[in-house]
Length: 379
Image 1: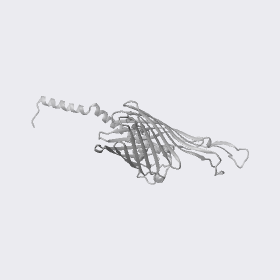
Image 2 (image 1 turned 180 degrees about the vertical axis):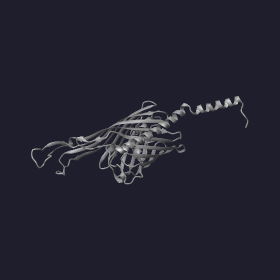
Image 3 (image 1 turned 90 degrees about the vertical axis):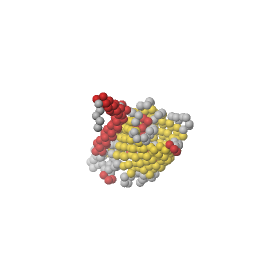
């Protein structure tokens, strides 16, 4: 081996230092910092889930905590596109429905967006979602959302008057949220949604507060995205109201003590905490002006066992979409199943305005199938 002279050795050393500095330039530092933050958030979320799992009492089938949480309406998915893709939407979402799935998604908006979604849910109940979101600049996006779940008037019945008392009651659940998303880099977004939750049936109600957090990371592999979210981290909920007031006689044998007013106290229940981790890949078919998106979500709830959602979308000419998915894989006796859907994007040429119309058919397994209709206005 030929020995290098002192000058050549110095030049070689400086060249290697230069290459090393290029590798660890600011862009690479930001890139790897984003990966580190993403991993830290996932690990932290899993620790939160582990702590919350221990706080949920009761047990359901197969040793799960099914039926032990409040505000079950928070577990119903939002948006016909997401529903058609089997709820595998954590890494994909970048519209106003992101405030439900993964708030970081609104950070990818380039303008203003409004969305409305309606579902004729089971047992004559209705589920509606309204959301608006807008980008403030390249870094910040904000949004607001309202979720309403309820049933129409129902007759009040008692043990003595099984045909009704002549009165009617209603039941309604509401969640109102405010969202903020930040694009920390061109590849990494973080979001948080703070929400007020209220459940009401006739004259009794329960109130709670919760936050949702999430992140999306666009990897250096073209088309591959990662996402995670943790939803409904908040206070327990407990019903109270004048329907729980009563008058009783504590001593039916002896006289003198009767008509004592009492207030029945209900138990408190945790919110349905849910951790999601998603992976999506978009394959662009430029030769036929189409693309195919595949998505997989891993779900870890505090009231059931882990499950997997999968979905895909075939977008043709950036106008017409065919979608399919499957919810709650690896769960027995569940309300998951096949989902199918269509989407239509109407946008005038050379205009940022667009109307997105979506439909989803969702099989609920042991329950009946439901139909989901969605509308998005984009400016």
